[in-house]
Image (cartoon, rainbow over all chains, first blue to last red; front, side, top):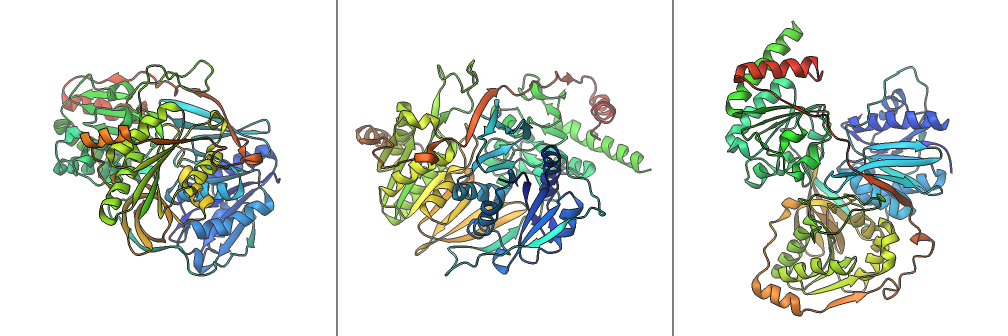
Length: 332
Length: 259
C-alpha cells in the first residue's frame, strides 16, 4: 500500500467543481501529515485542461482518464476506469465528494475492490496510523466516529462545504499522467439520455454560504418571492423545509432535511419553519442560524443563534431593505 | 415483472434517542421502530409495477426478530412474500458483507428489478444499493425520482447538481428511490389481515449458502456514538420589527461575522 492520498476530481463545464478544491485541501493536509503526496484522478472526455487547476490547488500528480465513453458519468464506466488504478497503486486513502455521482459511484467501487467505505464524512483525521471519520447519523441526533481497519483500502465520501478549499498556487509543480481507459464490451447497459438543467440554481444549495429557507409559515407558493428578494440581496440560495414541498409550493430540489439535502452554510435564515427533527437533520450544522417564526415556542429557536418571534411578512421586507443598505455601504 | 424490495427496520426519526453508555449503539428500550421511510416508497413503487404489469413483489429484510414488523407492514401494503434473514452474525457485518448476504437472498428468488430506499435514516450510509448492483453484476440507478419501465429497459430520472438526469438502463437492474417518486399508500384492512396470515420465510446466513470467509471481517469499525456538540445558547431579539431587524443585521455583521 502506498502512503498517497487520492481524490476523485469532480468537474463540470471544463472546471473542477467546488467540492474538488475542498477534497484537495483535505488531501494536502493529510498527505503532509503522512509525509506523502496527493494524486488527483480526473475522468471524462477532454479533461486534459483540468490538470493545471488541480495542480495549482495541491495535486502533485494528476491521473487523466480521457475517453469519449467517460463524457457522461455512469457508475459502470467510472467504476471500470477507476477500479484498476486504485487496485494497482493501493493509495492510503481515496476521497470522493458526497455528490449525486460520488454517492452513486463510491459504494460500487468499494464493493468491486473490497474496500472499506465510510460515507457522509464531516471529518476525516489521522489518529496515529488510523484514519478516523466522523459522520452524522440518526437524523443528526448523534455523531458516529468510525475507523477504517488498518490493512484495507480506504474510501471516504466527504460532505460538501465543510473542508476549506485548497489555496491556489499557479507556481506549484505537478506531474500529469495519462491512464488507459478500459473499453466497454458490447452495448452499455446504462446510458445518460438527457440532462435537463434546473435554471433556478445560481449557487447549488449544498455549496451556498448563505441560505434563506421557508416553511409552512409562508402560507403559499407566492410568498417564496419574499425569500428570493432577501436571497438576492444576500447573494444566497433559497431552500425550504418539507411542508412547502409536500404542498407543491416548491420542487423537491429545494428541500433541506432528512428527506432532502444536508447543508452546511455559514448563515441559515429559517423563515416560518417550526424546526421538526427531520428538518434540523439537514441544517443544524450551519455555523449561524437565524430563526423567524410567529410561535415563540417553536423548536427551531432551540438551535437558533438569533431568534425573532414575530411576523415574517413584516420582518422579511424590512430585513431585505436593511441588507441592501448594508451591501450598498460595503460597496461604497 | 418480478420485483424484489430490500427493506430495513429503523428507529422512528421523530423519536428522541439515548446513546448507550458504551457508545456502541442506542438504547432500544422504549424506542419505536418503523420501516425505513425511503423503503416505503420502494415498496409502493414495486406494488404499482405489479398492478400495471403483473408479477410478484418479494420483500427481503435482514435484522433481529423485530424486523419482521417492517416486513408485515410491506405485506400489508400489497407485497406477496417476504424473506427475513435472521442471524446473530449480522451484528458484526459491515455494509459490504451485509450486501453479500442480501445478494444471496435476492438470487434465491426470480427478479427483474431490485428496489431499495436511497438510504436508511438510521445510519445514512446509502451503500447497500450500489453494492447489490455490483455483486449481482447489474446496472444501477440511485436516488431515482421517476421510473418508467419499457421492454427490457427502464428510464430513471435522478436529481443531480443543477439538473435532472435521465438514465436509461437495461433490466434487470438495481434502483434506489427518492421520496418524491410516489406517495406510499396506507395498508387496507384486508391487506393487514392478509399480511398476518402470510408466512415469512426465515433464513440464516448459512441457509443462504453465503460463506463470507475473509470478506466477512468488518473493514470499518464504530469507535463510538456521541451527541452532536451543543450549540451555544441563542438569543431572542425583542422590540419593534424595524429595531429588531437593525439589531439582527448588526449582530450578523459584527458578532457572527457572516455578512
